[in-house]
Structure formats: structure tokens, C-alpha cells
Length: 110
Ligand SMILES: N=c1c2ncn([C@@H]3O[C@H](COP(=O)(O)OP(=O)(O)OP(=O)(O)O)[C@@H](O)[C@H]3O)c2ncn1[C@@H]1O[C@H](COP(=O)(O)O)[C@@H](O)[C@H]1O
Picture 1 (cartoon, rainbow, N blue to C red):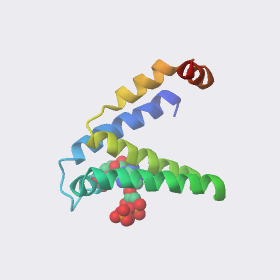
Picture 2: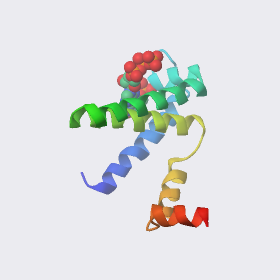
Picture 3: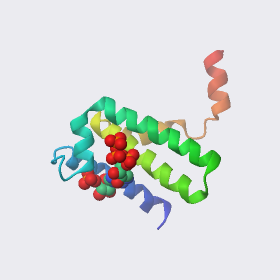
Picture 4: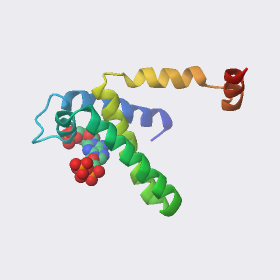
């Protein structure tokens, strides 16, 4: 699967999450998170971020891949809960493309 097809993975996941927000918490993990509310979803993103950091520092590659997938999935649920289209985030990354983080930081402190 090439890079572009991988982006389709995120687009499909976004569609699935949007559908599941209206599903029953008994049959859907996304619906269960939605029922628990924004604070719980945000907390899950924080937990998965921490687990990703631990995997990077103390785990093997498979653990890091698994935790990174958990983090991206829960971030997608957070965006879905807030009705922020993935495309907005990708457009922001496109806007930043080619601008060095160091140059951007220097322009902020000038
Ligand atoms: N990619 C994922 C995905 N990644 C991780 N997870 C779930 O995320 C949960 C995280 O596990 P944790 O132990 O951290 O969470 P927990 O113990 O349930 O939660 P706590 O109450 O302890 O916080 C697990 O239940 C995983 O199965 C996911 N659940 C769903 N998806 C995707 O979302 C789609 C919709 O899922 P449903 O909403 O369940 O239909 C699926 O088809 C998948 O494509």
C-alpha cells in the first residue's frame, strides 16, 4: 500500500467514527466513548500519548507501532467529537509544509 492509500485509511476511519458517534454504546467502542463525553475522550488521548512516550523510551518497535496507532485513533475520535474535519488538520500541515520549525519559532520571537 502506498502513502496515498494510507491517507485513505485515515479518511475511512474518520467516516466510520462519524457514523459510530450515533451508534449504541453497547455495540461500539466509539459510541461508548462518546457517551462518556469530551473530558473522557481527551483523557484517553493523554493516556495514549503517555503510553506512546513510554513505548518509545522503553519498548520495542512493535509496542511503539501499537501505541502510536492507539494515539492516532483516539485523536481521530477527539476530532470527531469536536466535529473538526481531518481535512482541516491536514490543510494546516500543508500550510506549514516547507517552513522550518526553527524559522517559524524565530519569527514568533521577533
Ligand atoms: N482503530 C480502532 C481502535 N484502536 C484501538 N481501539 C480500542 O481502544 C480501546 C483502548 O483500550 P484501553 O484499554 O485503553 O481502554 P478501555 O480499557 O476500554 O478504557 P478505559 O475505560 O479503561 O479508559 C480498546 O478497546 C481498543 O480495542 C479501537 N477501537 C476501534 N477502532 C476503529 O474504530 C472502528 C469503530 O469501532 P467501534 O466503535 O467499536 O465499532 C473500528 O472498526 C476500527 O476501525
